[in-house]
Structures are given as C-alpha cells and as structure tokens.
Image 1 (cartoon, helix red, strand yellow):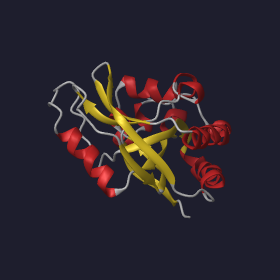
Image 2 (spheres, one colour; image 1 turned 90 degrees about the vertical axis):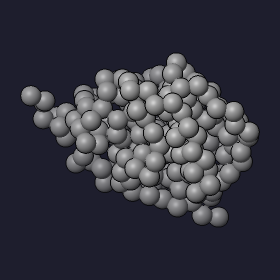
Image 3 (cartoon, helix red, strand yellow; image 1 turned 180 degrees about the vertical axis):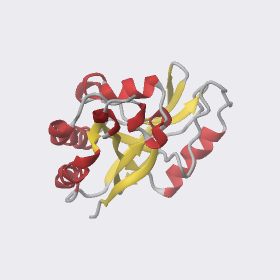
Length: 199
C-alpha cells in the first residue's frame, strides 16, 4: 500500500505550449515514428507537444501556492521567440532541439528558483495522470532539479522513440505557459492552469 504522502503528490510540468502549426508539426513527426511495443509514445491532442521549463513533485493541497509562484514569474512576460534547430535522439528517445536562448534559459531559471520551496520528495507512479508511469518517469521527475536544470537545461520537444527525422529550422513564438499534470513518458496530459503571454 502506498504511503499517504505519496498519494497526495502530483507530478507537475511547467511548460511552454506550442502554436497550432508547430504543434501539428510535432504530432505529424511523432506519428511517423515506428511503433515500438516497448514504448508506444505518440503525441496527440491528449499528449500535448511542449517545451518543459520545470518539473517536480508537488503536494495537491499546495497547488494554489504553486500556481501563485508561477504566476509571479510569467504574468508580465511578453511572447517568447523560439527556434527549432533540428532533431536529435538520446538513446531511443527522439526530440526536436530548441535553441538555448538567453530569454528561455532565464525563464527556466526563474521558475526553478520560484518553485524550490514547494518541491516535495517521495513521488511515485500514483502522482501521475491515471496513476500510470514507468519507473523511468518517476526517476526523471524526482531528479530533474539535479540532472536536467540550470546548466544542464536542454530545451526540446519530445516526439517519441526511433530515429531522428530530418527537420529544417523553424522560428516561432510561444504565447502560452501551462502548469500540467504529467502522464506516462512525462507527457503533458492535463492543463491545471494556463497563462497567455501578451505584448
């Protein structure tokens, strides 16, 4: 039986959502990857393409406080210019690389600093959407601050598994930040709150 503290945690992703044309590009590229029975990750309207800015486990009872901390960082931000520089892979995981611009890195770092006080240990698969996650998903979120943030921050859009497609550079503006409940494969499954970046 899971400890009550684990049941009361939620796997959170603070992410930039993509404009419709870039979102559809990511979904098309994901759909073109070969189906691997061991993975079965496909982006779609329920597994939303995104660029992660922060990931961690938070208490469900503290979601309002978490949302307030995000709000203080993003509410005055203008749209954020982003650039897809190509595709790559880590192991069998395929992604679109996002240029590590000064503004993007600064937003990531401000969010990580703002959320430090509400990050909670002890997350399990029960913290994910549908209570469904792999051990690798749990370990990724638990280790995000130490292994994937600040100097190790590598902005990207995960597509699935297979070989990287050939992709020309794409410039676009991100106008939406969302706090999302993570699902299996650390996909964004449910938006808990959304912020629109305005000029």
